[in-house]
Every structure is written in C-alpha cells, then in structure tokens.
Length: 213
Ligand SMILES: [Zn+2]
Image 1 (cartoon, rainbow, N blue to C red):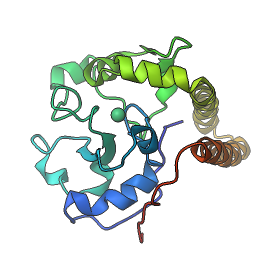
Image 2 (cartoon, rainbow, N blue to C red):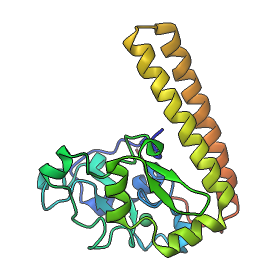
Image 3 (cartoon, helix red, strand yellow):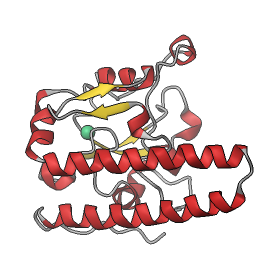
C-alpha cells in the first residue's frame, strides 16, 4: 500500500507554489519521504514542494501536479532529495527512489522497533541512504510515537498482501476475487483514515489546507 493516495486533480501548468494547498491534502500534511507530520514539525511554512523527478533533469515536468511532492525541508535539502536522481546505470541496478505515491513502502523499507528503518530492496537502500532516513531526529521522533509507526507498518503490510492477491487474481482472471480485494482495499483506506484522524487529534490545531479541486 503506497503511503499516499492522490485524490485532488488540479489542472497542470500553474507555478509549483500554487499547488501547496492541494499537496497538503493529498499528502495528509506529511512529508512524502520521512512521513513526519507538519504539526510535529511545528509549522507548515517549513514544508516545501519537491519535484520528484527534478527540474534540472525533467524540465517538462516542472508544472505537472503528479510530479510535485510535499516534503519537509530536511528531506528536501540539497544533499538529500534536492536535485538528486539516480543515473541510468543505478536505475538498471535497482537503485532509485521508492515512489511514496505509487509503491508499496513495506516492500522496500521496513520500520524497526528501534525507531530505525531498514532496506528490503536496493530501491529502499537508495532512498534510506540518499534521504538519510535514519538521521537521529527521525529515529527519536519514531520512538516517541511507537503506536503510530507500529500501526502504519501493519497497515502497509496488509496493503502489500492485498496487492499480491490482486496481482495473482488478475493473472488467473478471477474477477470475483478482484472485486473482493478492491472492497477490502476501500475498507483498509477507511481504517487508515480513522487511525490518521485519531493520531492527528493529539496534535495542536492548525489551519486546514484548502484546495478547490
Ligand atoms: Zn521529511
């Protein structure tokens, strides 16, 4: 289960800053990479708009909403996500960023009880190393919120299993099973929404993001 599921569909072509409200909703006010909530960061002013595929390499995607990711300033630093993008040779070897909008996180990165994250794949390794996802502040943050990270890990695992069942069902053309898996997916999304709501209740109140689309 990808950590983020885009629901907003604003038109492409606007300056990146124009999309901040929509991104805050689609990324549930969290950093796409370290998952920290902006309220735990104490301000959304420090959150930035990252170009998943960097502008320097993919200028044609500069104003494409699906290429814009909500990121805390520490993950988006020049020496972390910044303009980084793997070379063709690295991509061929499996080293690349895990896409938090499209990929099952748990297939690549595993949360540990120690508050650290460990790589499951080369893509997970590339992401953890480049983004420094085991930096001390993040480990401390995860340890302060063990229930949240434990539940998140579990929800990702269930999502991952559902993905595998859906894939098998699709290969064997079991339409009834595909429909049931889709229903389970919707239920899981509902549970996640409720759990997120509960977690966010503990956080200080903050202006709600606005996006007309
Ligand atoms: Zn971050």
